[in-house]
Image (cartoon, rainbow, N blue to C red; front, side, top):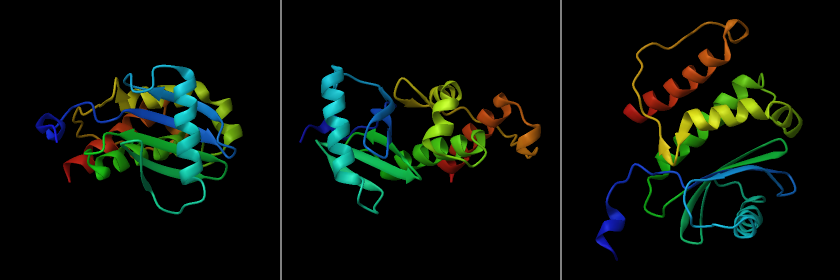
Length: 169
């Protein structure tokens, strides 16, 4: 085994993928060149979906990668990382993404709502992961203002704070 493969890296997330109930891509963002063409990405997504859509587990190992996933109504959310990546770290990223979307969509995390608010979805994804790196600035203030009185910036900051505090525990 290559010793450099076990060294920690800031680039923990290889991809974030959102598929619908039929395994069709709603959004996918790849942070490296493991799947350079759209055709290769779609094949990878089909493989992930076929392996995970009937399982109740949350972790899969596919094509030498660790895949953490969660389903909600008619959506499947995937976080892809290296095989040696800490599954808890990837799960924290997935939970942050899901919780942030749940707040933004008023707990209505389903395909129709997601598609109607895709600009916010993309913003949330970019706020959580930047170029494969989980954003890790520390903020000591957590806003407990009711969701209806919060701006999008406050919702995103709250989501970022959730992941940061869970990483520190």
